[in-house]
Amino acid sequence: VFYVVTSNFSTLVEQTFMQLILTFEPMRCLLILLFILPMACVECDAQKAWSADSTTFEISTVATNLSIPWDLVNGPDGRLWFTEKQGWIKAVDPVSKKVDTIHLIPNVFVSTIENSGLHSMCFHPSWPDTMAVFCHYSFDSLASKLVRFDYDVQRDTFINSSDIFASIPGARSHNGSRLVVADDSTIYLALGDAYLFQVAQDLASLNGKILRFNPDGSCPKDNPFKSSYAYSLGHRNPQGLTLGRGGKLYNSEHGTSANDEVNLIQKGGNCGWPNVSGQCDLPIEMGFCDTVDVVEPLVTWSPTSAPSGLAFYDHQAIPEWRNCLLQAFLKDKSLCVMKLNEQGDSILQEQRYFTNLFYRIRDVEVASDGSVFVCSSNREVKKPKSHENDDKIYHIKAHQNAGKTQSVNTKVNGDQLQVTFSVPDQQATITLLTFFGGIVFEKEISTSTEKIELYWQGSEWDQYFLSIKLADGRHLIRQLHWQ
Ligand SMILES: [Ca+2]
Ligand SMILES: [Ca+2]
Image (cartoon, rainbow, N blue to C red; front, side):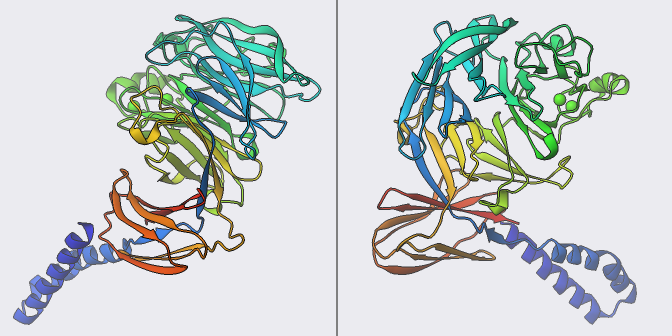
């Protein structure tokens, strides 16, 4: 549509211009030169086209039939540890795909609707000297807690537990949470407002805050507010928390029906909730914004996309994602990749990946080799047929050309897509999918080498990815962007 409109407009401008030149009306020609030509040139500058990532992603499933995995954490033992909402703590070996059950927390409260249960976990900063894990979970419809569990490496299970925060006001949702260990061995915990809204501005309350505490549960002396665990206040329901370059702390949180936020957290900063939602931009917010120096979000999403887990990516394995925040979306069923500027204090660009492929995504974790794990969160909703064995944990890697399998070459020129696909020894199904998961093109490939040329009218409102399912079970994805 964009092409048709702009090219028609351009033709119209040219025709009109030529007509006027030919009719020799100097004044009208002058008007054209002053107004219409600059408009035509704006269009020249804004030439956009489809481009393809240089990375082909290879996606594999490492765990199936899970029940709402909530937090994915790289284990110090090479396994990927994760929590499940019902109270399970498990670990999976991403190579053998063996899932080990480590512990079931007995007193977890799980609401059938909304969002309570076992949420976040992190490892003790002094591991392996101190083998312990911190977990945050609901133990009542109106309360959550943060508990330290000691880990027995021989038996691969938890042995003792001790409360760090024994009773935090909670609710059937709006509990948060996410745990992150900082380089200085303190721990951050992002907590929701438990629907008590105004407590997010009350330093005496733990809710609606990003807390900072020592592993023994004490309050760090250099916290911004005297004798307070609060590191940042004014948060609604944060479920994303991650460290970027230079220890910068980013969070993401759910908005009401609008204004999901990603924030660069400031020590002692106030992110505004419930007085401010998103930017300071409404008359009703101005009184608060005039008296408090509100930390405004780096980005907002309206209507909401439902952001959950957040991770920082800075590895060369996927060059497109260097210095990016990776945001798991539940409602928007995609992974949002946000390019940061060099200072890490603004977002230059965002692209959505894998839309509808995993369906709702609850968390994202970056492994030390630059591969990425995501988990689905589909048992909370009516699962689509294609997701019957959910929930799952997926492993996303940059595809390496190994053995006989050749690369997938994608060339995009304007609205012409050309795919060269060479797999000598196996069949494959190649599909072009739209942003909403609709199939534009599907073809079975069986010959040794095949070149496919596909022409399609790309719309700038859409996003596309190529899905190549190899007969050996590997799934390759190449993302296309309108830029
Ligand atoms: Ca805010
Ligand atoms: Ca606002």
